[in-house]
Length: 93
Image 1 (cartoon, one colour):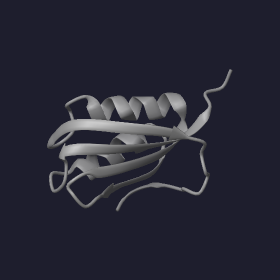
Image 2 (spheres, rainbow, N blue to C red):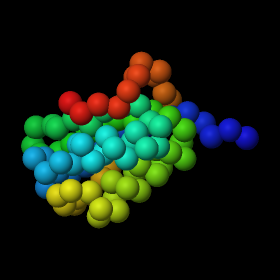
Image 3 (cartoon, rainbow, N blue to C red):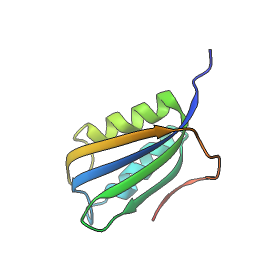
Image 4 (cartoon, rainbow, N blue to C red):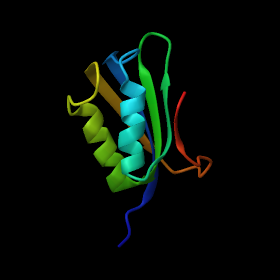
């Protein structure tokens, strides 16, 4: 059985802007073979959108919660959807 393709959107709250968090997230996503983006949002949150195998998205989600990221993560809220297939790389926005 193959790992289903998903689109994960995660909203990360904490001290995650101006500390290298998006760069770190991009590096983890690329290691996992995911495509998508990490973008700063108004109010200090970062939105992470990643598409790829569910298991790889779960690993990225675990990394976001691991305490290894730059800055400090208070909370991560995620949503899984069907992939759109409109992403080609993982970028910082």
